Image (spheres, rainbow, N blue to C red):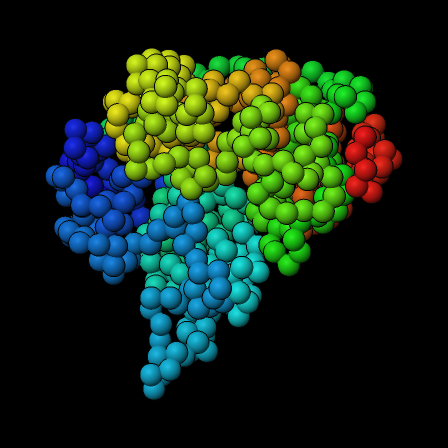
Length: 523
């Protein structure tokens, strides 16, 4: 059992956790819920030794502990799997598992002994992975299993998992749930940080809801309801935005009605996720969903459109052939907004203020005689901040001090309100974002679509794709393995296509080869 007593953590004037007391009972799966900025990550970092409390105490089996770093926490049997995997892709699975705790024999790394020792700790072969294969060659599901095997090799008894299903296919999620239940049977205590309530009811025994650094509610999952947990988390019911009531697609498939066309597009081969003769289109005023396990070609799809990578074939964007001399800025200025997959490296400048991050990429709109118009910047960004409910103390504070969800909402506000786009790319738009923010983001995507803006929606969240998309393409190994229209959406079929099982295009959908697109000719 792990217990926190009157635990508090502040960062300057910001109180991230306040007088927090909670017992995590052993041999159970605990769900930790709350909005972005509620204090979940701060609590877990305190329990894992990544942060030191401002005040309060932590007890393990009634013994007070004071962690100086994460090694102290690991020594006490605590392990954590971060939301973004911490693996060395150039190393094998077994080398990643034993990294930092390598057994040696005569000053030589003894992999064989380490592997035998690890297998002895596993209940059966269901937890095995390709031990000697490089991580870069393994699926996301195997990578996550490697992260958990790292904890088992170190005999961790208390496992903290941060948004563990964010990048898994439906089939992989089922296997992952079975793994969690098996770990519980083996005597592990598991803490699941998640925003997905279906996961809570599927595998968790207890829930703990945080809001503004305080414990709002705890209880048995079996006696809770979906609406109760939503109210605990955001203080109200979710609004019915009518997302599932999207009107049917127009039958107009003329070239002038297509906002984006890929015709026989291939990118550099031998690179993970390379496109292989891809042909697809997005209609004007349509949400086109793209499903697929990570590394199936989604990123290259965006890089080709933005001319970040070279490609063969043809691309037509908003009636312009951009295959040859177009540059990224020219394409963006044509009316393209971008919500990238990784906000930290692709969308924001962590060391700068919120105000400056609000105007990245559109700085010229706020210049006067070659100087920034500070008054205009403050007025405009204040308006955007309020419209998207970005929680911050001051526009001058560093964006790194905001929660991930508020950082994401800031990026959305900048791209939608600052650019007034004709086409928007949303790549994992709600990853790591709480229910209230998801509601706002989904409503904005749907509002844009109804106003005639096209959207390329790439998400690992199948429920998100099914709720928002008019059509869905599935990518596998750089190729299209399935195409579905709204009336024919099937989670099982889409999931099978994500695993590489080719699914025939839905009846009534255009065949990309019938108009010459596969040959590299643009309509």
